[in-house]
Length: 606
Image (tube, rainbow, N blue to C red; front, top):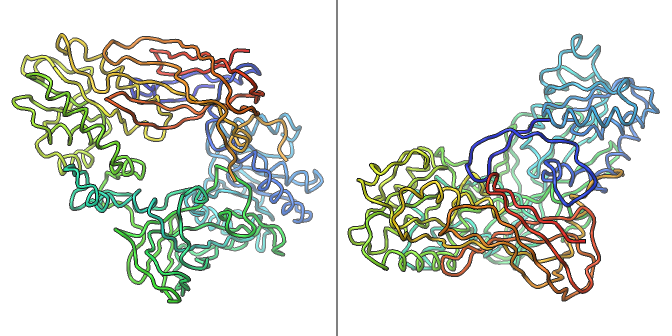
């Protein structure tokens, strides 16, 4: 089928033909790169839903909302001893097509009616013959409400279900806990971090918190270092599935504080009670809570940041926490202070970007490299070509004589440019695509310096080598560059390290049947590909033969990019093998880079 994707080099949308794939190689497909495989491989989830659905008893018509691959529909059909009609709706076309294939392969096309639509589009008497007397659904995110479970349940109970219809799940309970964590504080309080750094760079304007995303952030909090639990876990609110839930709710909770400290955040999780009796449950709780489920990547805990430097709390005291929700989000108020708000502007500074801007080592490296670049010789034009703020602020804070500093920021729209102007007011911004630049944009002069971190907002959550878009755009700019331009970064190096990753591999492995994150390195880091930014873009290939320093089962290679500005900056990605291999003495890998698509391929030599 055709699938839309963003070209890693140009940033433009394009359509590609996606097949079913074969059994060879170590390629990943769109399903493997999503959270769907991880969810289908979550055995604890599958067992819990299967057990609860089996307890429903006989029902003539079962409705499955947000069917995905059709797993819950198949469970219901099996539990009803193949004597019921199941209606499954799925609005996402690739999943709907996959569900059709799954049902066809299991011989259930006559018993399971698949509808390519949202549940709120279903009409009784048109799309289904009658109301259903049982409901199964799993439209849940880490926060619980973000995928629209409340409006879906309300509509289903009013229009699609008989009175007193059975439901799986039966209810969900959200729990929360106050925590102290310097790591979490540094992730979001850029103003406070900059006050400590005192390096002359300022990326947080006075109205910084109007740009920062104060919504919840999904984390595996067990992996956060040095976190201190300040309070007992407390019940935030309960959401019933067996009846139409309220659109809004507000709950006053008295929270007992066990230890003095600074509360930087609230950690939340939920527990699903899948059956009416409360005997079948599934939890997203962290590992310090009894009953926590096994490691998975599709559901995590949520972190809600307290504003600024947090809230001081005293041992054996009691805090008043007001938890409120609407149909799509949750809000926590502590002693009258709002824990989470949406950005007031159209532009939102993400948590990952905030962390990068507050990284003292990163700031120092980029500042030193740009100071060196702008101080090498008499320069005419300096162009900043990415969405990062660092290059712009560092360039303007460096004495650059008569050099004209300008920037193109492809991922910044109106409010993003407003933020940029608030921290780099003297920067000249060019509102053009890189392909349409001419010498007139630089008053007939050549560009002597091209700067980037590189960072493109489009690829913030993508694999680290997607930022090689900088290389493509450096090539597009070649006619406008001077004879010996200064390019920062001058090189990019793709490094790898073979690792034992059983949990991650299991969450992404291909399915044969559905029924603490363990990892360790097996080799030292090794380089796979080197990208020379001083030359025009070209396809590359590489080979690595590395010694195994610790024998074990190798599930894949952890990959990251080092950008040579001068030293380094690392972002991680993982290339998983289709089948793990036993790493004994050496491991041989081939690597290639396609200059047309920006894609990187890693294969093992067997």
